[in-house]
Image (cartoon, rainbow, N blue to C red):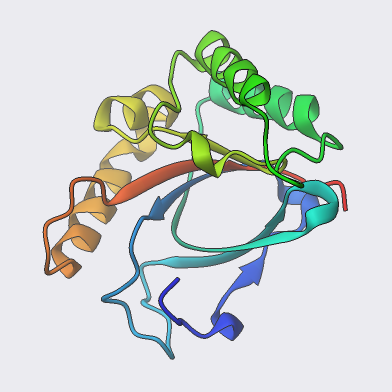
Length: 170
């Protein structure tokens, strides 16, 4: 998180979850004491009883109907699983990866380490964004990404992560 003040982050009420979130991988170049207007600062609790805290900077995306249905299914599948509490088993990750591929045709080959109850990673690619996000919001999403990428002074291989943020049982 690079020491951005935690007071800048807000939790999303459970009644609005799950959400599809495009998160910056690095926040090194962001102001530490004020928000960047175009970015959303989300705090999120995961891993059941472990109550892991994540502080994410990025943008909430508008999922396609098919994506939203799959998001609810994944949230329901792992709610109260405590995945991420005292580590996550390889079997859980393999099962998640299979469900993700079956439901949405996407993968978590590079982002699986983020998997916990309440946060469900998806590998970022422009093709994945197009597969998951409503067409009417794609132009806005692409514009947002270009604007944020200009803020990064150092080129990174992967500036983004995609997360489904769901309810946590605790």
